[in-house]
Figure 1 (cartoon, one colour):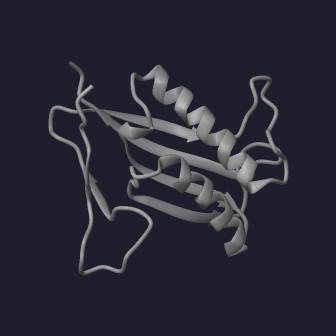
Figure 2 (cartoon, one colour):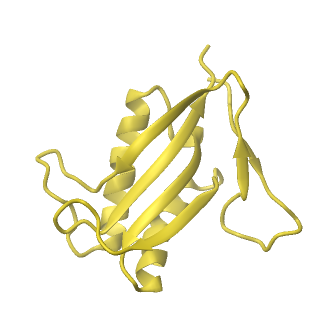
Length: 135
């Protein structure tokens, strides 16, 4: 599968753990994913009370949605990581799991603390957009 994404950095902006922008060519198919939640197959929330564990499960579920769409993490063009906490360290804990999962494919991302998420005991949700070039 051809790579559809170009990550853009700027020497005039402070160094970050992610690209500041990304582009996809006009003929790319965009995939808009619902927020990936840390849910088990039975609908229960995984890793209650564990920001890192919930980030990992949300990523696992996001990979499942990407696979069903004909894509992978390398096709993601941007993310938004939502963390139900007012503590910066909790946000960083979740972010480090996401950052490590993406590795060198450090897409533009927004990390946000929110008051509450939709499922009982849910602490993390990850939104994403992906782009693929179909053969």
